[in-house]
Length: 526
Image 1: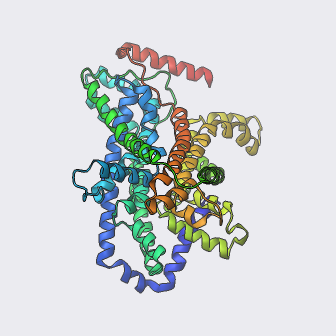
Image 2: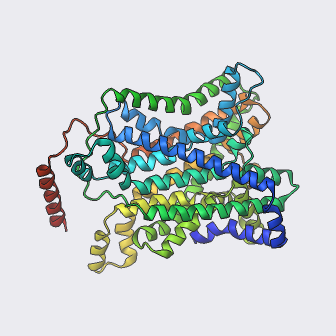
Image 3: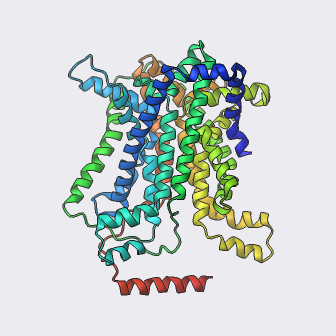
């Protein structure tokens, strides 16, 4: 079922592009404009992903494994940019840059402006899984390396990071797919990418076939990225919470801890300070309309309703796939997981149009209902749910399920009484992440929302598109505030806490004694 939902946009693309024939497809692909769009899109994705990996991994290590001051506060603050939609961030950066620019004719736009904005609001996709993985990694291997004379940097590069490579690669995959599918920031900052070209062609209505051809090329790029990611993930060890009985010792950075603090402050101020200044300025300008409060309330209810339905439907579809990936790894489970990612790399407008076609031709009772919009969210954000469930299920010991089955419990009862409770933390985290992301989704919401229904994202876009920033400010503020709640919950549930420092590394004798004790305890529990 989950695979069928993920394949709806792909089936729509194949059907529509196939109507024009292979020759028409090649004529559109083999052009200088397509080459330029591909180069710009891939280069932007590469730059942003590299920056996200640097910021995400670095900040995760500083928060979980160093004695940098204020780590507990930064553990939450570093995740909050995830609550800011890219189009809101782009508008606020343009607004602040116009206010402070020395030359009034200079506008904050272009490739590097988009790279900065997308990096600042995408790096949490790397930071959160890497920080959670670092918390769960058993420090014994690092302590053995240090006791053998390896330096701290050498241990970090050769022992610690390889253990969390799946989290790094998975976060990088989400970042690169997010950048390829982003529409809001690149449109506002005037960067020609595949997504902007597709949306422009659809909205203008002059070349729908060409837009679908570009979208199909984006699918092919996503397939190549998924193949490369699969090879990289299989090359690294998977992290696990098993045998972790104590936190790792916090590294003493000495005077360099202040440099780490400065880096974290810079990231937080840039990501959160600029939108805060801009939104405060917009709010100070006042709002227009006597029924502004009523429209704001209706939009908030619309956002909450659609996002909640989308999160529930997504997790219902993601649960069997995630458990299959964790409990029965193989070609089938890997193929199902990769299929879920294909639609995640598509522009929301393509997913929206495919579901409009699906609703009109296949599921007419769903057309113009909130459930069709929820189905679009499930199609777009299914990988977020699958990843959360698979991670939680892989952390849970399968021996408990095997013991229940050996006692004569039916498979359905084992799932209900053992597997599901063990996976609930992942289900909750996945639901919060999908809910958060659905609240920010714009193109699919614009196409699929029922007539008369508004969301915070659509009202915000309508106001900012015509330069009515004062009217847009309340919608942006409420959207960010509501999205910050699941972001905070995700951070707290992930177990990201500052490392317990002030403990000396174990000597080889102590390490052997502790390892033996752990093994004995495991034997007793078994």
